[in-house]
Length: 144
Image (cartoon, rainbow, N blue to C red):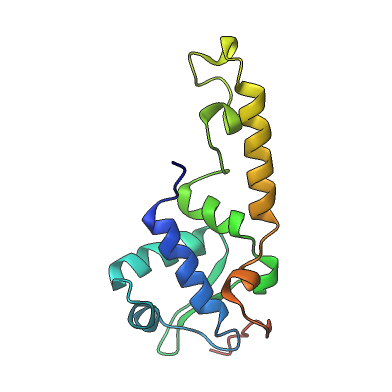
């Protein structure tokens, strides 16, 4: 079974929540309350998303989080890579050649690489906008 982590699943929920509020800065506590995801988990996800420049963080009394760009410009592949730690790969040889002892004699290596490429391309082709089902894509401008 292919499965992404629960943290990545929650990360897409967090991103969709932020995307559904494109004209304002959203606080972590609000995200936690409205998505029913524990605040420490939301904070951990937001930290990773800020580090990967998918979300901007604003400090201060009116601080919080906003998408770094329009939801239509953020792919599901980017969110997965940010939270799973690197390019999407079904097998080690799909993204990081030279780490598998069987690689030199594996008859399936090329097939796995093709499959991985198709899946990665499909995920790149799906935007946060589509997943979040939001229509207004204006990004927030902080005037702190």
